[in-house]
Image (cartoon, rainbow, N blue to C red; front, side, top):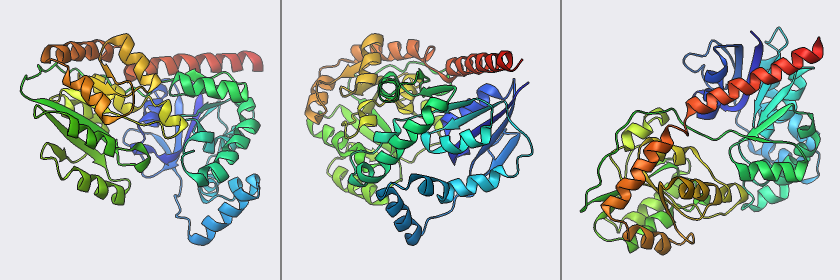
Length: 384
């Protein structure tokens, strides 16, 4: 049994990707978890990290450090990194492997690992994550690029959420990257028949302005009375959510419904017909989006309606589980939806049902177990 450190600068209990990593590895290894928030249920070894709020002085100082490319000072004096260092001081032993989540956690993961290998699960493409914002392009984008150039050659393994992001890391930094998609837990749910007179659309996720959720509201301008849309949104940006409610007020067929825990999403949305996600590519990561909700639509046994986002489009086309518009315009996707018969939607739901047995957390857990075992075995052979 190896001793592993699982590290993430996120609230662990509400971070499904990190929790799936823990669940994959804890049966065979002693896994210590460091992150924000309270100890998640079932985690045996948890080290909480303080999540300090940065005041205006700290924000200004950090911005100046980024502006003048003082990246070491920015990183090692960052309140979250200093909090993580204080938490790490409680660790009385060394680890056989450190698994770091996101590029921000990588430099300190390499420091804590010592001679042990580090696996970076990069999730998104860090240098261009919010490139639609000028402050990101000016400050944080160059910082993450510099961090990747310095630190990525020192990782033993690296993974991310989809092939497009993996290719970009490989192209820019010359490191091999594996793909570990964001698949939820498998759910044994039925395929619900579609009514001819009522086609229910559902979109769920965070209310983030750069996602342009208003485009999905405008979709209802182009659909007849058979269609309704429910939005299950987390209030990440209250002002933006308020503008969405105002925009939707003209439609009696649009409702805002309360969010449910992530583990309950598939069961809660199984009675709908179409999972909707029209995501204009406002930044690199949105162009290559392959999010949790896409696979949750599958687990809910829904037809899937998307724009031409290449990662999602490739799977919808391969599996036959939905429709893909030619553009990210609301009218274009509405035209595709309007042509669907209940029989068409039912066939797509059955395709999602078949895909749900392939794209789920049980499959990704086994892959991660096997890859970690291989990495540990290689290290052991090298040491001995």
